[in-house]
Length: 294
Image 1: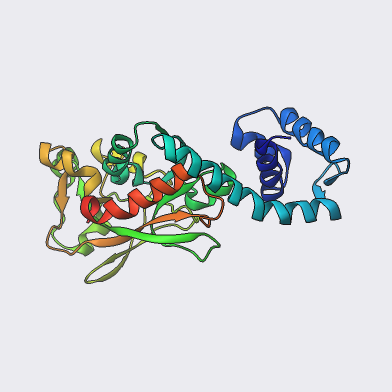
Image 2 (image 1 turned 90 degrees about the vertical axis):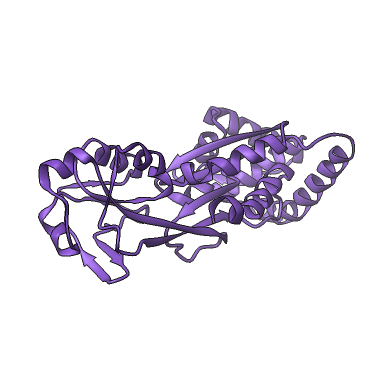
């Protein structure tokens, strides 16, 4: 039996079914089922009880799972240690990005790839944030916004400032707001958070402002695009629109008000069993975040 088949068994237990594992690995479901069947045949016992609705570990499967959770990480660490003695780090890493995290993390990721030319990096942009770590087999996720309590490790990267912006065409047609209350007379674009909550309370330094909108999106990219096209006013991360402000494509609205801050987090499962490439990415992001994003 191969170590990849043992990892596959662990993934099936963690994700709960063959379909989820097949989706995360981008392979046919039948291939996952066949490999688990081959593993059971090699062991001479059933690891799962199969029904049309779910998979359940047998007593032997439960014991095997508990043992492999200890054995596989040690074996992977040993294998990677041997590889590192004779060559530059290799491997692949899957990193999840939510909202505007792709823009905020770009410089960090480029530096990482420059430092480790033999490591392949795949990014996965999602509105579900760190929940996709398990759904898509991600090694880590850069998450912006509130961190709900979870079983993942969450390390702060930086704070992300957001301000109000509109296009020159919108301001020319509708006027420039002079105070926060004037925003109620304007078209506002509101973001629906990954948690499903509507971000309809904007927390400025002067206090919260309850807002409403006829244009709501769970895509921060779409909101930024709509603001650029003159659809209205919205809160956008400063870094994500820096170039558009410099070129005159966007105007800052009510610039005397202090910014609203979001926390940016690096979220990942326990480092136990983590690949060497994933470990290097996490260490790199944590080490450089203060310099590039602070």
